[in-house]
Image (cartoon, rainbow over the protein chains, first blue to last red):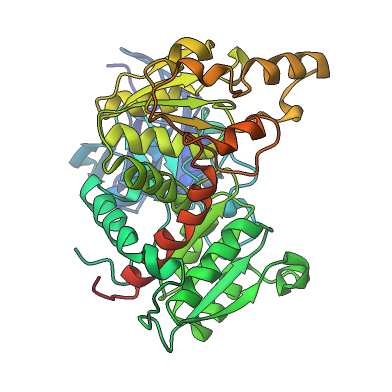
Length: 150
Length: 309
Ligand SMILES: [Zn+2]
């Protein structure tokens, strides 16, 4: 394996195998770095055996996988590595949860979730492998999920 | 089977056994719906009737149903009279109605409105139509009409005719009849065909619907004909519209070759889809169908209130 172009981290979380070009969207979904003051490094279009990929490293923070799983919407092949003392202490693949709240906007303009009500958007996950989601309110399935992410 | 407190949002929330139970309860309600006998099942109960979009037929049949059960009705029939015009959210209106009543029936122009209302109310929500979404009580009254006229729902030949693309009633009905194993034939002009998603849903339930543009052949063995209105707005020009409407009009002539006990249904209002001469035949059940909205809604109001029927 080629050496990483961004420095190794001592403690924290590495999100690897993000679909190339989607790192920024991943950060947006995870609300990083708005909410935290951790150091975050991002590598875009990193060459790997399986083609290009993006990598996100968050220092000094172990991101719970339930929190990260929602990125499977746009990066279904991503892996989460928890790093402790430069070593991978835990590793797992992202998996979509059963419902997604406040992540994407319904594509139906007359859906009640787009009508200024005090609710967050909510989707039922129909397929976790090839991401397919359906609006909890109006049953609409957005065609292009990535473009619907808030 | 216990429906106490249950929200009635979509026909898809119900199993076949549950639908059967509702239909049997509705059957018992007929003499009371006609006013031949009286009932006090919901005495002291209040129904909120919230129509954010006008629908006289649905509203009146709900209000009649509640009154026939000796319950009372509060609410509005016209959105201009509501605080929604002043920018109040649906969630807040529902919280208020929830505090003032025991059951809420609601019609709203936005899809998913009933689902949202159910999340904000403790009282059961009965969806009387949410935009292009669901209208489960219409579907149940359609099923009840077949059940009542034919004494059962099952392997019958059912023809759905007209605007199958935009008509939500035919989508729900196709779904529900697939649960019952009915043989479905979809007859429509090419541009208003049954959507592929609906056909796939029917197939997933084991049905094998056929689609055609020809009415005569489909009618030959039909037990039930469900007619829907074809709207002018769906056509680019008037000439094409007039041609299509003429092709699918139900006339006495067309009924010469049909089964004697064929029933013809229509959700109403009807425009020109059915020749008024057909009204006098034994085939026409669309006015009875409109009446059936009352017993089916009486059954639902009682069931969600926890009344044993
Ligand atoms: Zn929606």
